[in-house]
Image 1 (spheres, rainbow, N blue to C red):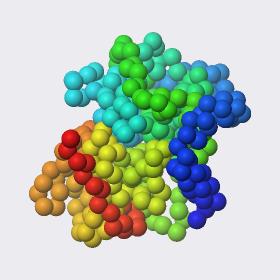
Image 2: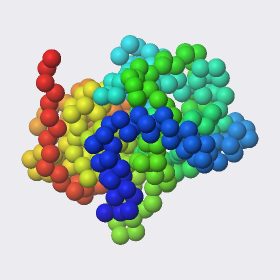
Image 3: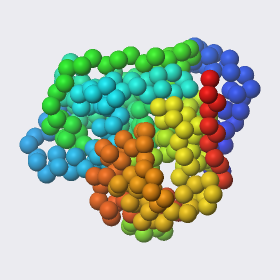
Amino acid sequence: MSMSHSRHATVSRHLRRCPRLLVWFAALALPALAAAWPVTGWTQASNTSNDTGSNTELVEQGAYIFRAGGCYECHTDTKNKGAPLAGGRALPTPYGTFYSPNITPDRETGIGSWTEAQFITAMRHGLAPDGMPYYPAFPYTSFTKITDADLRALWAYLMAQPPVKQANKPHDLGFPYNLRMAMWGWRLLFFEPGVYQADAAQSAAWNRGAYLVTALGHCGECHTPRNFLGAMKADMRFAGSADNAEGERVPNITPHAKAGIGGWSEKDIADYLGSGMTPDGDFAGGLMGDVIEYSTKYLTQEDRMAMAAYLKSAPAIDYTPPRKQQK
């Protein structure tokens, strides 16, 4: 166990024994943490111009990153036929309902007034242009691993899209989760920024799959159960969750023979990500259906096979997410 994991586990145990500590932590300690937290990336970003140029190749690269990152399905209210990337999609969670923001180039309601550096800071460090931390419903905890080159390409693609003037909808969160300042403490406990580092002991295909699954695809954000503070449980990675994605039950995707997808071959997984059809002839629905429809079906078969190889190498976990009781 790493020193960081041990620290997180110890603090979490204390907070679980006395939940009121969380409130006191937010009310008393976090303003000091906020003042001390380094926001160098944001400070530098404010001095960088927004100039994506006319690099068609970069925009085309960004289009692929955009698909791999699942940006469309999160930032488009498809259920209500919303404008592409204009936000407003509801994300129900045990902590309240989050609404995705407008990421079109509109300067008033979207991200058109941002600089490229501010965009990279948001993705890498989870900080808004005003220096405030984002809630981890925005999966910067995974996006932090994306390379600078891919982030710049994604930025170029987003800036090439049509602007849509649509104000962001405020999150609907109860106390104490509505205390955004509390995110400084959450970050101290659970967030470790940094670009994906390749494992020299593994193949190029395995590393490509790891990058697609853990960084761009951020698969663990939905397929990993969380603790009572909303952080992913590292020892249960990919084991599924009762209510992680829009309140839906999310399955175990570890290679466990019974609880997970151990009976699937790598080609089964790659084909599923391309067509949505399982080995037994069923089809993906719900949020995973959207992921396939707007994201993974656009990836190359080589990339889908790389993702499959990485998932098949993950530790097998015997866990079946419980079904929520009907009220």
